[in-house]
Image 1 (cartoon, rainbow, N blue to C red):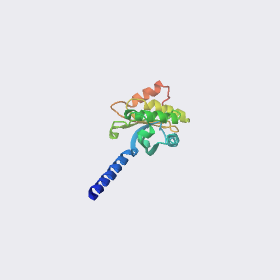
Image 2 (cartoon, one colour; image 1 turned 90 degrees about the vertical axis):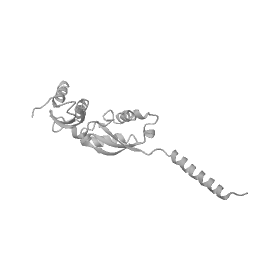
Image 3 (spheres, rainbow, N blue to C red; image 1 turned 180 degrees about the horizontal axis):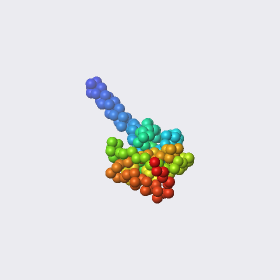
Image 4 (tube, rainbow, N blue to C red; image 1 turned 30 degrees about the vertical axis):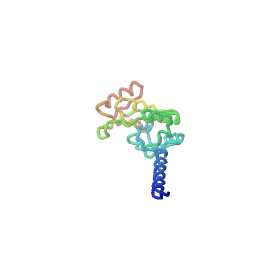
Length: 187
């Protein structure tokens, strides 16, 4: 006895089931992730960042927001940071980027303070000619609680910080710089 309709339905079911199973086997597509970039203190550092990211082939820089020190990255955590728990992916990314950039870049979660609540503070220091000194100033200021982004204009001797005024202020930035023996200039 032949069952052509049942046979066709069974074949169709198997084809749909196989297609669904195959779709589940596809690796997840990279998702855009916005992270804060530590070490991005002047425009010339973009080239340095891109060079470091070339050493991380599973990570792509999609866009860069220099003013806020953030970047949008595309990566599949399962590929780029294999065997890393989801809650540790950003930390692992930071570690890889530090290693790829000779300890001059890393990433961190975005600042939670809304941008409209951040204030811009400028501190004038003695002009510096060395990129490493600019990085050092950036790191000093960036580590202050409440600083969302620190930019350094080496030629002009200016440090521009985006701060959460509920957590820090200009006087606190100047105090930290003085403790680190950075020479401030009065306007």
